[in-house]
Image: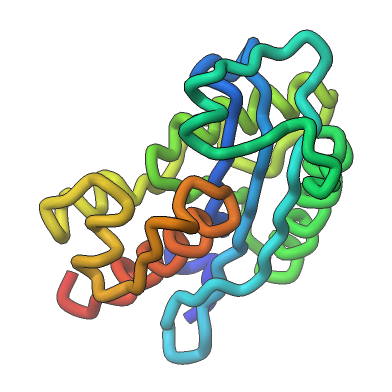
Length: 195
């Protein structure tokens, strides 16, 4: 089976975004990670390609102290090697577009834990950067709902542990780690034969 046949022609791409608050129009996107999901010859989903960027806050954006305390991001740290939203999204969208052509999928579909939050920030950043997003504009696959159905859990750490996925609290709340764990969780759920 090809991936285009599995989810209505959509290419699943796991996204996690760390932000300076909850408002996608006013608050900064500070970190983003994307993992394209593949499907092997046996029909098993797996994390395929990963991109990760630290993002410079856009001009005039809000940085809520409580959000920065929660995600532990120091926006002034030069070791972040942060880039502008447009640079990160241009690279990310180009890789996704290449995969869409390779797989003959029609659109990317955002997979996330609380996916609507990430989709909102992604769409706002794409609009600010004047970029056309390869993602479906409102459909998502949310591991919160999938985990609630399968495990009775909605918290990423608890859902991962119930799925038998290793979890390190000290690495949580970075876009890279949370995307990797969400990708593992998504693949675990979708690879259930009796689901």
